Length: 570
Image (cartoon, rainbow, N blue to C red):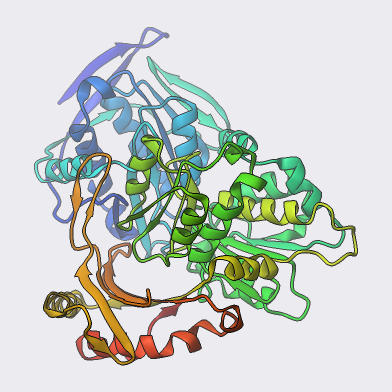
């Protein structure tokens, strides 16, 4: 069936074709959106069904006449997907679409554009840190008007509509040239292609003292290296670090986004950011190194021959934020971390006299606290750090936060003098607050059924345990399956990770992660607190070895999964 509506300025009509379709199984959507292999998304009506289901899940009166945002991480299929989404948006009554040039918007920038332009929401085309290409991963999610990922009530409704969708409302409009900024009109539907950096850069300038950072990056005795991993922050690196802040052009590497991330795995950790790690652990290493992931919401921070864990990174940023970052000069509202993240942030919160929240993994929990005015800085051990300037974790923001701290600490050090280093800042932090030794073991691509059986076994062991039980030299305080009641909306999140917590604050945690497109990833988290500065310099794997052994024995991981060693150690 073809219906017509909307007289165009030229006197013609914009037509909306009602295209028959059938439900497709397996489009269960989480707060990270829907992720599958790119070959699945690019076939038939797979993507179109999901987008139409989203429009079914949103209140029609709110969608009609609204403005929305579209962008993504530059991976394979984004260009074709953009045109499908634009036609469906027009067909479902959206009045205006803001699209990042070339379909580019890093995830924090998408959140910023939604907020800056007062948009109803936005589509983010990304599978985050997962590989890209015709045989790799693709993903899409919807963010709401605060720039935050859609809540479960919407993602559940999307899934419901995917099971019944039978008609696609496709506007009969040509493909839009997304390579040039400007406005294209079809009747009363409008597409504005925008600079993907501009709104985000304007926001970052309100958050940070760019002159202070520039004073560091233009020093002849300071070197940095930012590795964009051939992913989306390559489109942001030169405009921000080079053009605005004066860094040397060769300080940004792998800075051209590629549809397949040049065959790499754009996950900024010690395993996958191997090129940067080699540079930063060389004899002539730069003073500062950082990397970001596929969609720009994650970060890794390195100093000269020194790695900063994400748990330490967010704690150090929080401890220095008021002094070094203008956005926070009036004080912090509160701090928060995901449950598996080491408790270094809790000790900073106690020192500052502010609230500290322990939430399930997932940025939406932080967003609720931010919207309620109770949270300023937050982080996850999975290399996600952020603040309430947007409603997503923000890789470039974390890099600029560290550069702000380094610039502030070195502003009175003369050129050629002994600079304050990333390592010194971190070790001074440990001396003041203590060190939370932390490591995460990832076992990727495991079979789902044995993993679920392992978690059920751990739940049973936790339920049967009692305070005072001995695990080697460790005495149990409690063991449970983490449950969170949101202090803002009262929602309850259960089964968020099985944890065994000991009387000295040490703990190990097991949970399954769903951010891959196939199989299960088992994550094991190990943490041990050390207050004695004389013992804080030990290698984390050495310090944690006894607890790692106990965790592996308790979980029987090798028996359940058949894995003798992890894919990634952080």
